Image 1 (cartoon, rainbow, N blue to C red):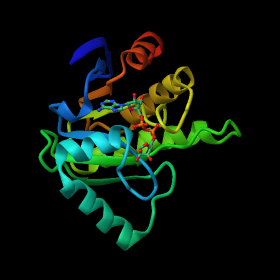
Image 2 (cartoon, protein in one colour):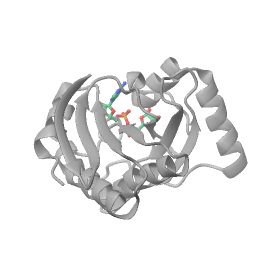
Image 3 (cartoon, rainbow, N blue to C red):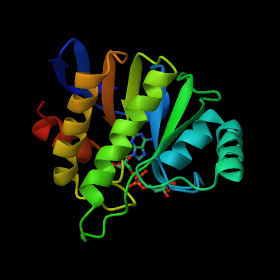
Image 4 (cartoon, protein in one colour):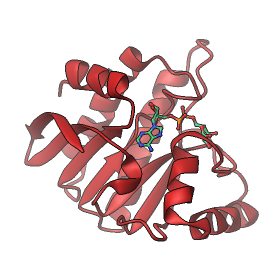
Length: 181
Ligand code: AR6
């Protein structure tokens, strides 16, 4: 793990890191999921491969009981074999450029942090939700992450460390350069 940027906002540490989120040593990691919690590709596939099928089974159970998630919604499963105790599955928007995606991405980030609060997770690592397979422009995503994180810190005191973690160096660099709070 390589820390590219570190900020402090109202006593909460925010770090932009380059690395594999499945190796994060935090209370909860966030997954960039789809509405059906079918964790096939991208960061979702990596999380299930590293954490084990239990994560997929708990996800399937959730969807069987409650139906698919809405875009912007987040739910929790255990972390299986991961160091992180919890995985927070949040659904970012598919980029279509038709409007509405910005606020849905904001919701996906904010609601993931809310779920962390509910299980008293003090440290959380999240990927660059929507900026992979879902095609959300990376530069456009950064200030949305920053605003959602700021608003969350302004209204909730539970999480003390928030990391934005990306395996892709280019994406991590864009976040490090553009993230301001
Ligand atoms: N650690 C950290 N970041 C990662 C890792 C990893 N192991 N793997 C990928 N990334 P994506 P989305 C980064 O496509 O765009 C899945 O199939 C990657 O560089 O995982 O929200 C789901 O099931 C990118 O910046 O998520 C959904 O169907 C970021 O994670 C769909 O993809 C997000 O890329 C969701 O697409």
